[in-house]
Length: 268
Image 1 (cartoon, rainbow, N blue to C red):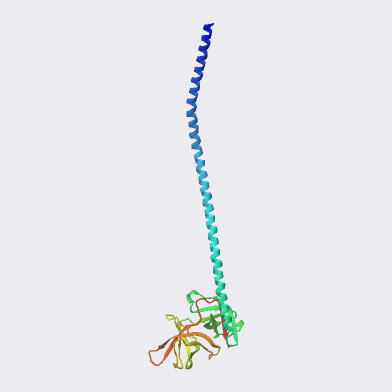
Image 2 (tube, one colour; image 1 turned 180 degrees about the horizontal axis):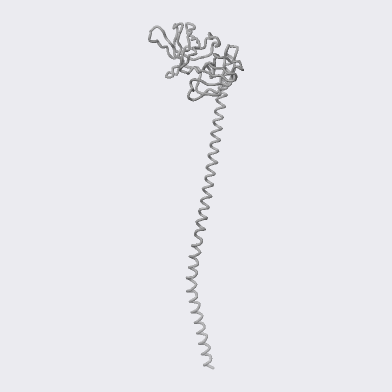
């Protein structure tokens, strides 16, 4: 009986020991396998992780580009609207100035027109307006804007006219003017434009008595189609010519000819 118990206990001990040995070997085998699977899983997953990162960066880049495009468009619209507003404000100012002048203009014809063409290469020489013979205009009529005389009509078509500006250095229109002095009126001819001095040149004066800087110059109305008392400018210099017998005067223009949108044509 004792011998049987010893055998049973020995068998149990051998079984437990065998089970422990098997478990230990399984753990030792499973560890490397799991590590290998983890490495393979990481290798397979890496490209997908990179693709996901590239996708996120691309979406961010596209979003930034669209935002940039929208901001540029908004900025362009703001600039365009500001330019339009400035243009309308300037045009309104010129219209108000012409309206104020019209009440003092003399003559049988007085017509306002828009400037439709003014080329940069001839900016100080000429411009075109959208009124012509169908509106009663004739060659030689005077053109005013921004508070003073700016030129006269040199070519009149049915629906448009060419204005010769007084800032044209080749001015040969010979518009008759009068200078109001303390001694009375002095008459002369508007002969040209001095670009260096930015002043009109008036010569063929009938008298020099009383002439001084600051005297006001206006049209005399002595020519066939021009009218009188349109402001031309102010005397800024009296020049003695080389013959020591005659003089001419420089006149600062009353009107600013740099930016003209609307004009008024006047005539007898």
